[in-house]
Length: 447
Image (tube, rainbow, N blue to C red):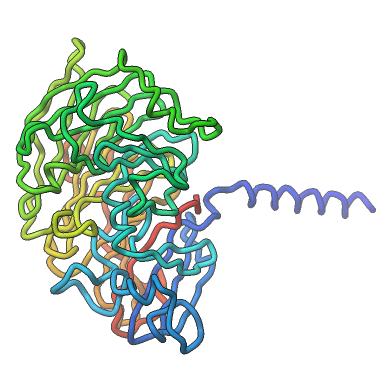
């Protein structure tokens, strides 16, 4: 082999190695079409916003496939939870583009594989997992694992395989407590759904609970909690071994708590500087953020509640598929929390939190017709889709949140709308452009 050929081969190998190691060439999100009156399909994009692949399916029997037989059980029975052939109007069991349809585990009606394949989920049960999932920031252990809480139980399980109705039993889970967080160690109540957060960098575990069926809340803080050991013989020992000597609690009063959603559910983010940020939904009224700053004497200072007003909107008391959702940036340093503004999933009230110091900003889409969907992109940013009818052939409407730019220019507690571009068309394709309201789904494991 001559030297020129040898050098050419080595250069090609270096290019190949770079491509294989570049995480941003992996799938990031898919544009989804699921219409009962037209072909289905996905278009997959990577973190450079390059199209990677696309899949097309027929519409026979609400299915994934290319035959005229009935679809798979999940898609045939639960297709409506993901459909795109109508916009949000009169029921919360349909419309895949609803703002509460997608969260940290992906979409409740389907997952999307790296090649664009649609993977059916039983919507009602995946919705339970989306209700129960908690926060895990600065996750260096395994980004495809998630933290869950349902009542007195807590667990660690895969993000891509939603636990659903099996959440409170031993089974295939990586770990699940028996009865750790109820009526012992300063815990008093039973109902807790996803009200748990872990910061792996600071080794801090925080759980919130409602103590009186009203506005009385209690924060439980465990310090010096070592990262989860996925190789432990008894993986449940991560919870069972929590050191009560490192457990403190702080009682606080909520601004409003009149529904199951606001009583027993919250997004709990332990920040790097000791700040704790809690985002909750009061159906028909607010999206609410409370921030707690360490006072240096073992307690916290509670700031005034920041509220974003909504109109008639549904929480988990109307079905697990409703309520507040969140996603975490791929670097684990930003948390975006959002809920519908209107009824069954239209519009969005959004809080964006910086994990390093608990600083936050907000964004409002007070829209009564169309949902918003979110997906992490590259290290710290988020894509947003907006879902009006794609009948015009424009493709899906998309925007982008540049988190670093937002926090450099928008003050704490500020409105970030001036730094979020309007929704662009003619950029991202959708699989079908007759009557259709597409949305985006993050590809779990794609980053």
